[in-house]
Image (cartoon, rainbow, N blue to C red; front, side):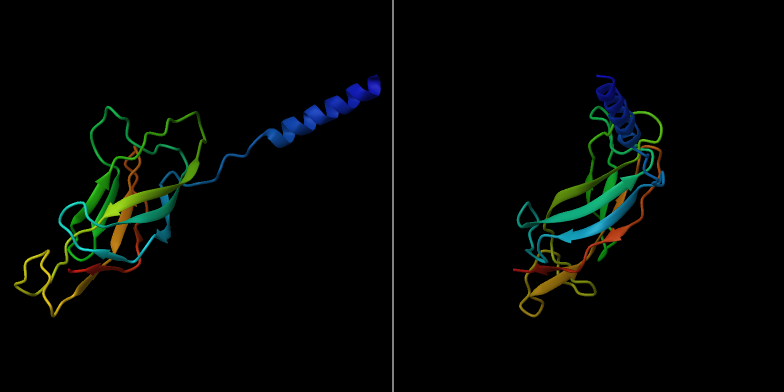
Length: 165
C-alpha cells in the first residue's frame, strides 16, 4: 500500500512541476504577423459587393487587447496604400487581463469588402470602368493599438487586383 502512495506522490509532484506554464516572453507592444488573403482579385464596388478574407496572427505581452463593448473607438486600422486613407477600422473584442504576465497570442480572420478603382493622375472619377484601364491594384496596411496606446508593427497585404467592371 505504501508503494502505491509513493508513486501517487511522485506523479502529483511531476504533474505539478510540468503543469506549471512559463509565461510567454512577448513584448508589451503588440506584434502582428501577416498570414495571407483568401484571394487576390475583387470586383470594384462602392457598396458591400465583393469581398475577401484577411488572415494574420498577433502577440501581446501584457494581454491588453480589445475595446470593451460599452467603449467607443477602434483599435485595428486598415489603410489603403494607394491613397493613404483609412480603408476600414475595427473594434476588436475585449480580452480581460487576468493577472501579471498574461501574454496572449491568437489568429484573426477578417472579411474585407471591396472598394473602388482609383485612377491617379487622371480626370476619371473613382468607381468608373474605362475600357483602357480595366484593373487597378492596391495593398493594405494593418496596425493594431492596445489599450495602453502601444501601436503594433505594420503588416502589408500582397497586391490585390480590382476589376474595374
